[in-house]
Length: 338
Image 1: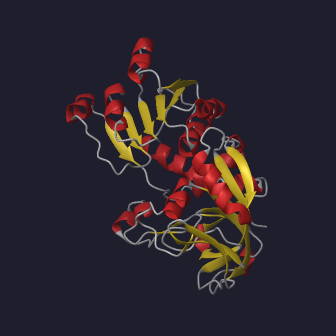
Image 2: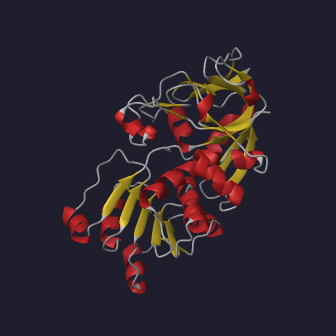
């Protein structure tokens, strides 16, 4: 089979590898589609501290089960599945309190263990989530990105009374916008970014108001309208954003961080306690695949609004370079395997 392998930073090749044999409790997935994420690019470029090389990258993938390991019911053969990349132990403290995404022995497909940028992948059977027939292949491969939004919104419990401010109109910001509007019917969703084309994508995803803060003060714009956000999502993760979010937030607001910067953030604690703000962080997803599959079945979200490009897997280098360089026109890039 063919597999996309990052041998070391900036060295990506397509290798011939033996067909994997599923171990006990595993299934083999014949991969049909996979999505490129920023973390794939970071591993390729050597910027992911958790990755070990060589590595088959890819943690967003969909396919059909074509073999099962010992202990797995043969009824699973032929099932269409989207794969949850989070592999957890199930018995540590974190797992016991519903946070398998930060398991003490966490393994993430495509990061710590070979992932889905391959014609076939062996994965734990419990991680291969069945996709209903009504959900198309290209929507099925988008389940994982939307689980990031499901994890974020699961922390902060949005309501129809909320005024939400989302920093960043990249893929993670946009899936969150769709969840806030389509699932939770949040009263107002405001998106801030410095790229006009990305702001247009945010509007297509349901944003009520978009602001380009590249040439104007976000605080001045919101103050002029008398707006104090009750829910703030940082999907851009620049170190200056947290303090600005604390300043802009309404008393009693929730702030959630979707990622991180390696640079420190400087904040004034009084702004947090004076308003009794709640600050959350979100990593990967904690059993959110069934949640997103339900959203898709009900038509509450629309992955088509995010998918901008599709490449054959053999053209993966060009696909990643486009993803990295064309932030104006490119949002979600899919690879086809079969």
